[in-house]
Amino acid sequence: MRLMRDLKDRALGLAARRWLNSRYLQGIGTITAFTVDSTRRHVDAEIALRGEQEPVRVSLAYAIATRGRQTEVSLTSFESSRAWLTEAALRLVVKPGLTVPLPRTVADLVKRAGL
Image 1 (cartoon, rainbow, N blue to C red):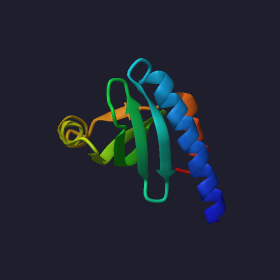
Image 2 (cartoon, rainbow, N blue to C red):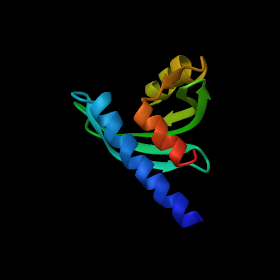
Image 3 (cartoon, helix red, strand yellow):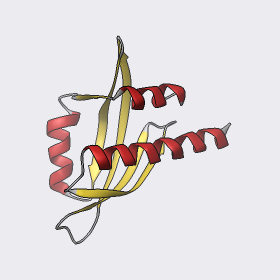
Image 4 (tube, rainbow, N blue to C red):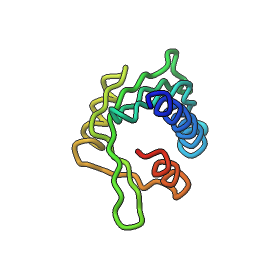
């Protein structure tokens, strides 16, 4: 069972990395590593940002909820290798409980993976 979960997590991580790079990071940087642990609902990522000498490391926990026909993701914790980024994410995203609606294709993948 663990092997299947690991394979699902790798596939989800690859899909999420590609989606985030193409949707949000064009011209800003590239996610170079993205690891999902769906059992813990945790992500570790490394992002190479334009103009930065060192990559930014991010560690976060997430929650997934479906409201009606819309699937959304929210962050429940956030840490990074940049103190200012951690504080901004906590103040602007985590504490207010902001959610991001997932595109139908991503939501379908999340549902099929049993997340």
